[in-house]
View 1 (tube, rainbow, N blue to C red):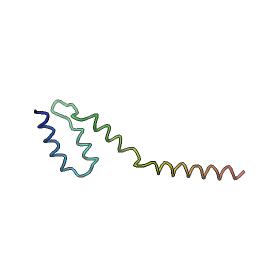
View 2 (cartoon, one colour; view 1 turned 90 degrees about the horizontal axis):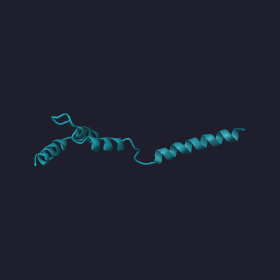
View 3 (cartoon, rainbow, N blue to C red; view 1 turned 60 degrees about the vertical axis):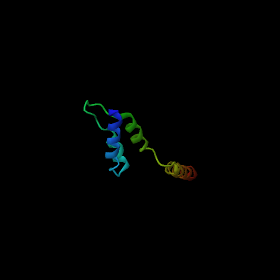
View 4 (tube, rainbow, N blue to C red; view 1 turned 180 degrees about the horizontal axis):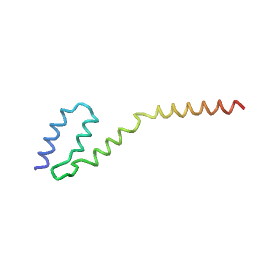
Length: 76
């Protein structure tokens, strides 16, 4: 019951946070014993923020590299 109360209290505090990154940084809170409450979950989500939203930027980069490579091959 104590854990449920802590989670609901924490959830009420976190709803005040607007930015999603700040939200997941707050998830990394440390309890009184020095243990991270939700360390693994926050690592996962913050890691997901590093992924591109789509592969369009990657495809664009490969297209540019292919164009440059083709131009260099045609110079000979």
